Length: 167
Image 1 (cartoon, rainbow, N blue to C red):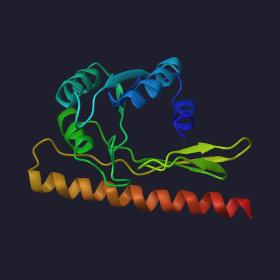
Image 2: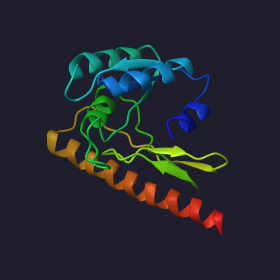
Image 3: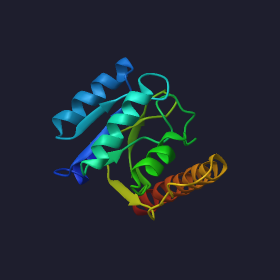
């Protein structure tokens, strides 16, 4: 599923946050070969350095891409990092999900999906979420929950749409 957004965003100035874990190295190499910038870090390793780098890249006109449930999960539970970055950069959050008609599912916490040959992919974008720069911790939590709810609903919707097209 990683390659579908990469194909759609090809040629754009996007910086992707990738975990510093060893698995992240493979993903980082693929992302770089596809022409995207990579910033390494996560909530548990190099997080503050990654946040500073992403804020600087945003100030220079780059868009940012993040997996909001973090490098360790739990699956579909949005971490606060994406809300914090949006607050700091004033870039909107654009929820994005991908559905596949046929795939292999890895036995990992995120149940990473790999498209099977000739499967169809459907990508959905949600309405942008703007995070004000002057919000409290409690309000940040409300936005985090909103993003989490939106992403779960979109994931269910895209899976249903892909299944409907198979009938």
